[in-house]
Image (tube, rainbow, N blue to C red; front, side, top):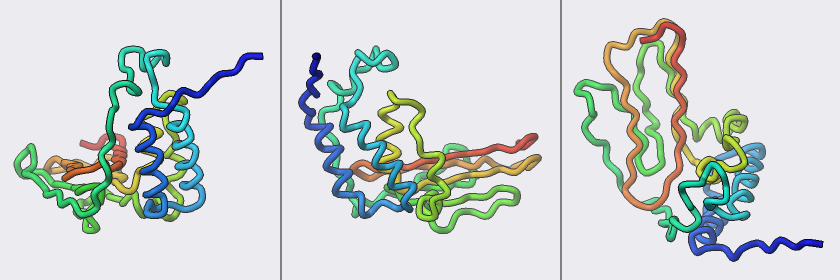
Length: 184
C-alpha cells in the first residue's frame, strides 16, 4: 500500500484559502454558482501547480507566489484616459462594474454580478481544465465584470475600451465579449 502525503501548504496557498473563507459571504451567486466556487477552491486546496504539472512545466507557481494581497474594499481606483481618443470607456474599478454602462446601438452590456446572483453565469464558470489554477482562483473569487454582446452586422463608430483598474489588494473579474457575424 502506498500513501501519498499532501505537501504542507505554502503561506500563499493558506492565504488564498483563508481569503475565500473570509469573502465567501460577500460574493454574489446562487446555489449553482456557490457549488462552482466550492469546487474551484478545492482545486487550490490540493496545491498550486509546480513544474511537475506539464502545462506549468516552465512556471512553478507554487514556488513563485509568496504572498497574496488582501482585498481592500475601501481602495479607490479611478478611470484613466482611453488608449484611443474618443473611445467608449467601460470600466471596472477595484472589482466593481459601473452600474451605468454606456448605451450603444447594437451592443449590450450585462453586469456579471447580476448574472452571478440569478445563476445564469454558473455554466461559464468552470476552469478550462484540471490544471487551470488561475481559472480556479477566478471562479472562486469572481465578483463582477461584464458580458459584452455586439450584435450581428453592427458597425461601431468608435472603439469600446474595457478598463479593469485596481487600487490595491486582489480583485477578480471576468470580461466576456461576443462579436456577432459581420460586426465591425
